[in-house]
Amino acid sequence: MSYIIRIDDRLLHGQVIEGWIKPLKIEKLVVSSDIVYCDSLQKNLYLISVPENIELECLSLELTAEKISAGKFDKIKTLVLISSLKDLYELVLKIRKIFPDYKLPPVNVGGIRHTEGRVQIYKALFLSLEEIQIIKKLEQLGITLEYYVLPEDPRVLINEKISQIEEIIERKLGYG
Image (tube, rainbow, N blue to C red; front, top):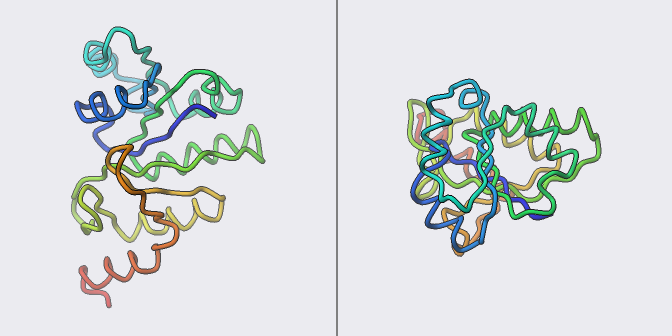
């Protein structure tokens, strides 16, 4: 497998271009988002932001699932960008519908910013109790989630720390 799935709610931005594409020699970027897929203005903005030597595809979650299941990203170094844990869960379900035993590589959880109901867990990672439930569902499906901002950063296995993370969120939100 020569693709990486990265969750980053900003999808494509300078850190992805400078910190991921260059050091990993990424040849193809896939923005997997039903919202971006339907928004030609946003797609055009992404097209002009990507270096000329990088192929860019903006796909729906359904089309991403079809291409992953068919091995379309196996022969070219590809970075698949997804904006949320919820979208990742939907993508995994779509892949499993096509290819029930498909094994995804570990997924990078790189950047989820603060919004109402989210608590800071790591430098660039804020999670809600709802997202904890999604992580548990992903874990049941055999998905490994790793937190790191840049490829050279140490990896934190979120799956191994889910109980501690849930306790932190409950405590900070006043539930525990």
